[in-house]
Image 1 (cartoon, one colour):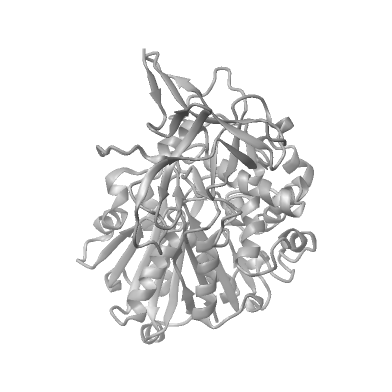
Image 2 (cartoon, chains in turn red, blue; image 1 turned 90 degrees about the vertical axis):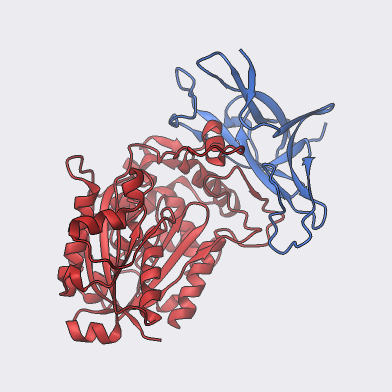
Length: 397
Length: 143
């Protein structure tokens, strides 16, 4: 089985671009990645592309729509939707195409335009006797942050986490975002500013919940032999896992209205995320304390705290202590979201997992500028999607 | 003008008060909510399921107050007032979310007994009343 290498990465800026189509954004990110790899579009042997949720039928088949403007070459195109875990999912599919020996060079790409406000439901147009559970949770009044708020309250009850802990996650990520010219939000927030931001779903405040953005990212994955032919700057894609939820997990997942009770739980909270992380460590032959930086899915301050534990960076109930000790700042023991995270970019669901990989690639190449994690040789990313999908990647040099 | 339900068959009108109706598997004992056509335990091979009512009262596991009106299909009160969602743990091994029937979160305590009620969620433009399950705190002691 051949190794997989990342030979090129590219981004379109994250933000709001009402005058620019998602297609043009995706094409730009693709051209940037191809240029970075030193190859042409006609060299690409397969495409795996995020299948967009809110952009109609041509968005669902975004890979084909993209190929129609880059120029159709007849190559296999796979459109994938795993909600916010799509970025990792497309990369994993691309990696497997390489390591199986089926192809030498594959493009993984995602592009998105987010609707305003709370990420909405997509109504079912199919005639089905069972109403979509998504419609039920909206009628109850459960936007996505309400799910995270319920889990965060449990942390507060169990471990004594405070409003200040939640706010300090934002303070820390905003310091990182201020160093990142690609970040949408670059203002450094004070603790007071975050604590004074409007409450959205108690205990989560506006500045403790990531925004939604337009964005696009592309990664070119190649076999080791192909990577050698085209040049330097290749980074090892040592692991890229994908896992789904396990029965008995007490996490209340979007868009459900019920789950296993804590008392009856037979699987851990965020079971798919723990499993994806463990699979990635096993695949790469690396343990958590060898990771030099991590881009985790900080949709909210709750996520950052919980994921530190779920990914194995500290024991249960200890995440707040890591934050307090400054361990998770650039320069600390385990820099978390040196890019500034979802907190500084906002989320573009189809592309977010690839954004994490692009940042990790730059960090390992030593080109991350003011936010460079010194001596970084091992980077990890993890991205989660609604209904319990999770993908974790480990990159090494 | 008629009465509709946010989910048909989700709430029973038992003589001692409304109960949520889910699915129980008589082979392995797994419960699920809302009702479904099979047993959701992957290790259960003999899946014999039937509709069954959950306990009338559960315990409060978590809660949040929603301060920003969600978009449709949520029907916001006008003017909008923040409302509370509670997560209630049932002895059947489930925890289930629903609106808090009345009031704010000031008197809520983890572990509080929460009873199931059937209440109005909203009224449609045509004047139809849409009802569904909610939960009401009945304190820490059994009555």
